[in-house]
Length: 352
Ligand code: ATP
Ligand code: MG
Ligand code: MG
Image (cartoon, rainbow, N blue to C red; front, side, top):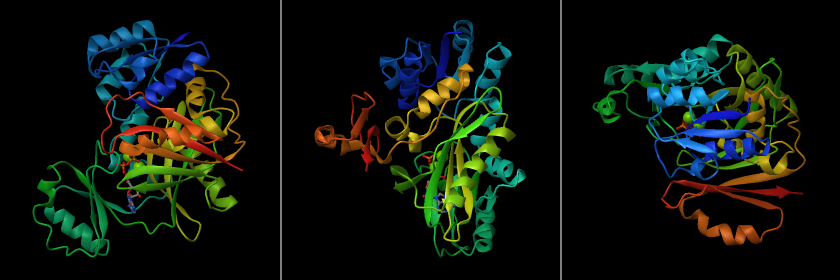
């Protein structure tokens, strides 16, 4: 086959389309927004809602395999793609698990992987009980649709009896309270599984978040070899348990004693893996295309240490200086309008 369908037309879809083109695959984006980042580089775009049945059917007709660039592809749309005969990678089960923070943690705990302690919160009384249980601290999150730290509320030494109105203020939707994890640092592993079940993983990256948004990823992470290997092995167990095909991003909290807890998983290429395009022979984007197209996965070896920085909002004003640096790869997403908090691009500086 030679055409890959991609649901979602943001920067991740754009970078997937670029990688696909290098291997002579055509890409067709399904994305309601006509001037999306991926539109400039994909072979074609179907402009329709993600759950538009006709559009989904059209995608199946013209594509040999369908993938996605974001985890909130509506589950009925994913099921419709499969029912219409699409090979959908990663599988719909990965979406189901990753779309709901409670399903995600239950899945992970069920295969023996540690997460933060958590409680489902459906009203203020449940929040009071859970807060008291977690030592009056925790992070309250919407179960679904949160990203870049949106839909979250931090409690530190809070009074469990004084939370009236919180549930409604969070939108009256299902919530989860997570115990605060006293992490030393945050790391992530980008890994992939092929159609024949083989698994590869990149070196863990060390991630810094500000205001809930990823700011930088540094490789190597300042963790021991055993911790790094454990993180990679954990990603592999998740991939196998989901009978997964494609690239996954697994976010971890690394504690001072060397133990790990999984924060969340992303069933797609991941922002904390953008450094791979500069510091590895094979980028996470090509790795994903290879996996879903049934090609050999190839080699995740890293040839350089590096620092990847996101260019968020006005950070793009630094682009002229970044372009003048030797050993820095600048990647811009083609977004015409700069807005505060908006990811405009990233730059990876090779170190040493
Ligand atoms: P993303 O854009 O990565 O999908 P998100 O909105 O899903 O973000 P999370 O990854 O759940 O958000 O949380 C954002 C950040 O908040 C984490 O990277 C971490 O720094 C902090 N955080 C989240 N949950 C916890 C926790 N239980 N304990 C301590 N810190 C946490
Ligand atoms: Mg998330
Ligand atoms: Mg996260």
